[in-house]
Amino acid sequence: MRPITAIGFDADDTLWQNEQYYRLTEAHFKTLLGSFAEGDHISERLLEAEKRNLAHYGFGIKGFTLSMIETAIEITEGEVPAKTIGQILDIGRELLRHPVETLPHVHETLQTLNGEYLLVLITKGDLFDQERKLAQSGLGDYFDAVEIVSDKTATTYRRIFSRLADGPERAMMVGNSLKSDIVPAIAAGAWGVFVPHALTWVLEHVEAPEDAPRFRQIEDLGGLIGIVDAIMAA
Image (cartoon, rainbow, N blue to C red; front, side):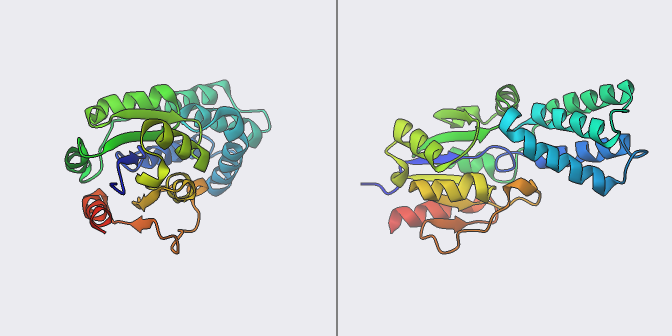
């Protein structure tokens, strides 16, 4: 039996750039509120709002925009001008229109694996935004299935890999988030290949499972084929 028959891929900051656009939007947001508070304080309050709102709005741009509005109301003690609220909505909409820039070695890696393994895109966030980015990326034809989920847990990976493939034990998950992509996939029984990104949301930071036998780390997706081949040859 082949040790790996299915490979899951995260999308944002694994296949294409994402966090950099959030950082630019946050910088613009701090400028809008600059007359009310210092930039670091605004960022702290925004992060607190995002944490609170994850359970209500989930991951994605719409929840981020609502958190910016909530933060603006809190920092100004309800005195935020309507014009500023409108500008926050504008930068939120602009975030929904950002271009899709694929990361190095994405196309050639997916092309090599396509047809040899069942490839599944497993991403969380806003449904419409993720569908838009996948369509604009030109990567859709490489994947046998696309799963847009509300969160990524060990249960999520067990369910997806059991339903679509031969179970998590014969699957691999590839992504830039240790918390969402790697740790829960390994807990489900799959291989986890960590591809660090220069920018990772602070709420996605956890310790790497260095001692886990199924943990691997590569510099970029150009190293994935070698990892897969080594596991298959073992």
